[in-house]
Image 1 (cartoon, helix red, strand yellow):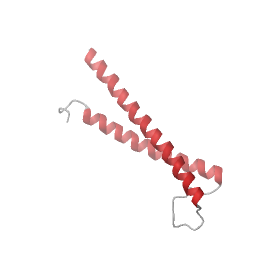
Image 2: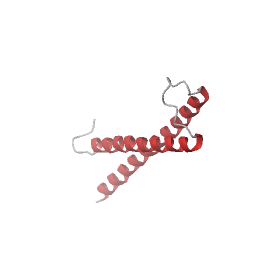
Image 3: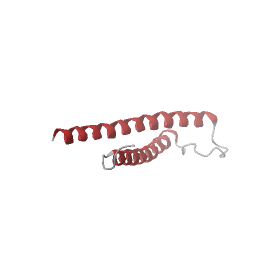
Image 4: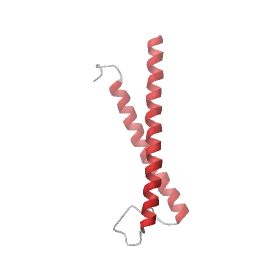
Length: 92
């Protein structure tokens, strides 16, 4: 665990908030794109009898890959920003 006031806790909080917000927005964008392309709502309800297995598989793969890649980019970006800020503080 880091020392109190070292910024580790705030960096984790910023990363968590950025990831949650980014994923929320990204899922909304993906749902909109899916609707525009297919003309149907994304297959999020497995109890819906009109949802087919291929639709579910395509939706799962597309959202899984895109969301995980975005989470990776967000975490790396926020950690890189923290590293740059830490280097500037040490240089002063």
